[in-house]
Image (spheres, helix red, strand yellow):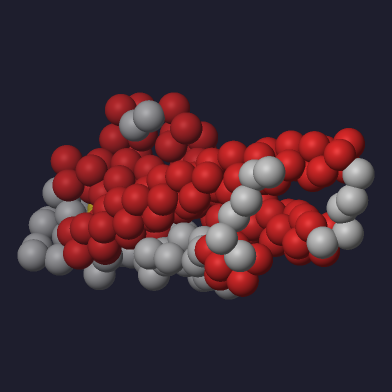
Length: 181
């Protein structure tokens, strides 16, 4: 018979914190994305005078691309977190079901079916742990990237003429995101 230490240990292991690293830089639902925040800092006027707070064209391009990539990664992480939470809930329910059935199984056929389900559960649980570790690593990298973009770009202005001049040099997805702005 396939055996795991105890249902209590199993339930404790199921309490894996999904995305424990968290995403402190992620904008909340009511907040604008990082790209939107940067675009909101357009400097009034039409001159080309650059002070310490005004991004030069190449710095603006880097900020726009980095913010767009961050927003894209952050959106993907939110989806992945939701997917992992669904899988975690499914595994917890299966764990409880397997624990409830463990003592009630009497016939050899039922024992075999239960053992097969436990083996499948253990494989899913292991894959879930690997997915959570990968998501945590991605969340940490996304957070670090977001902090770097905030440090380099937020609180700085840009010239509208520079943004128009750079539009054709931006990645296609970013060009589409900027088209309506």
